Figure 1 (tube, rainbow, N blue to C red):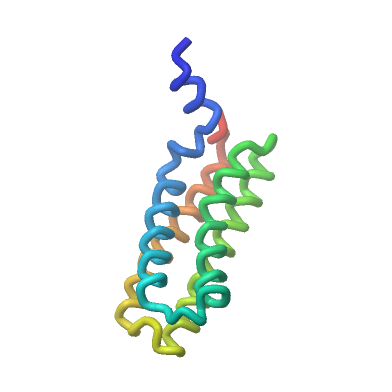
Figure 2: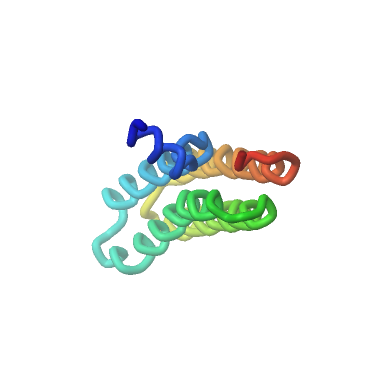
Amino acid sequence: MNTDLKINKKFRFRDFEVYKLALKVGTEIKQSARKKFPKEELFALLSQISRAIDSVALNIAEGSERSTDKDFALFLTHALASTNEVVACIDVAVLNNYWTQAEADAFVEKLALLGNQISAFRRAVLKSNVKG
């Protein structure tokens, strides 16, 4: 049996579009924050925003291996809550002039799209057997 197929079946969350989007948006936000935030924020706001945005993808991945759709949906709810935390971090960054309002609005728009996709995926998980 092809080992790649076995790995992909085991880690099927890698095929979820919402997971891929979470990674993409997270990378964009963290890269921008590393460039824009002052060094004194390395272990404060930058660290918090990084943990929060990483939590979105990590909850999707962790939840995908739960034994019931209800458990998976709970992890998707946690992922959605983490998107809210990232938006709050963005608000703090704007107040501290680390990002312009236009930069923040662009990130919030992407997070809103991600949040909508997580919500839709959660509904699909609860309605049908997405886990296969």
